[in-house]
Amino acid sequence: MKRKILLVIAIAISVTMCSQNSKQNTIVESNNDFSFDVLKQVNSSDTSKSGSNLFISPFSIYDALAMAYDGANKKTATEMRKVLKFKKDQSESHKEFANLLKDYRTDKSVFTISNAAVAQKSYNFLESYMNCLKDFDATISQADFSNETSRSEAVKKVNGWVAKNTNNKIKELITKNDINELTRLILLNAIYFNANWATEFKGEKTRQMTFYGKNSVEYVTDFMNGTQEVGLGESDDAQIVMMNYDKDAASMYIIMPKENVDIDKYIADLDIDKFTKIEKSLQTFKADVSMPKFKIESRFEMKKYLMDMGIKAAFSKSADFSKMNGKSNLLIDEVIHKSIIEVSEKGTEAAAATAVVVREKTAMVNKNPKVTINRPFVFVIKEKKNGAVLFVGKYVKPENTK
Image 1 (cartoon, rainbow, N blue to C red):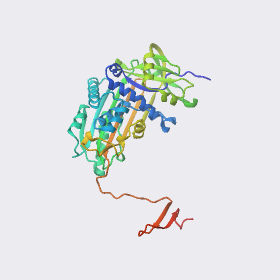
Image 2 (image 1 turned 90 degrees about the vertical axis):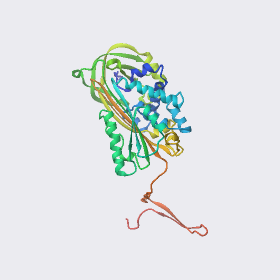
Image 3 (image 1 turned 30 degrees about the horizontal axis):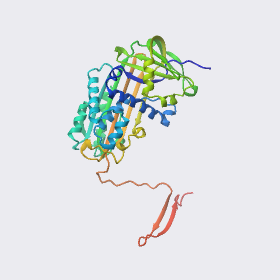
Image 4 (image 1 turned 180 degrees about the vertical axis):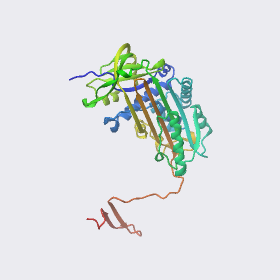
């Protein structure tokens, strides 16, 4: 039996300001293009396709990577430029992004964007690179990553900054396992979004209804109900709803694939061109809206996704971030992203944070490696004078076991 379901899949929050500026601002167009690329990449993972909810802030990832990109050179910069969709050269893209962030700082009605950099104490970064970070309005501070005790303090410092700039929604972005004695720089971005609906849902109208998940699995959950002025549209494979937030500062677009269309296959085909076409097709109606209340929390280590998208050199020993320190001895160790969203009768509260962890390529400390031989092994005995192998063997278990 076919069932009609209203407003069930939250795909994107689009800031109206961005939409208005995108005609003039190519950096916004680039970010939006990147947004759907990274959504597809993350969603294609086995974990996400297993039936888990997913929420990320492409802008937060984009912003943090843009700060790293300013320090990249040669092939490293070329790959990052391609994946980040920058249409202008490095200096022009930097200016455009810095101007966009400056524009956002003048209007904090529903969201704030914050940047920071935590650098290894007494490490010599180029003044030109530090000035680039200042153009991003990044708070620059120092920490000591050289020993375990000081690293713990650095982790507290980073997480304290993240908590402060996400209204305590994200209290732990990184752990002590995410940094080591080779860490030289952590680039940070935080976004906090809090907006009421243009027309709030009334709590007394919230009631339990059935949500039909993948493979028609039925879930009973709280649905908000109310009459809203919305943008409505329909394509061959989806229904689309656009809902405005208060002060006309932002909108949420909800794209619900039709019953015979798999959500993961739909996302695999969703790009900025398809989304733009959907956006242009919407018409304004008053509608009786039913949609679930929901909360999603996610944490991703983005390295594997970004490498699959084409940023490879930046994470390898061939990385060239010489515009950071004048040398070619730095690489990106990991890009850590955490996000949370809560949708209720009142509106939407969301936060995200991204950390780009930059380290040196080779160890600068003497440390004994730990070798644990705790699985079956082959052994070889070889004489040195002529190099002949004398004995070979296999060890699978201690003799005194049964």
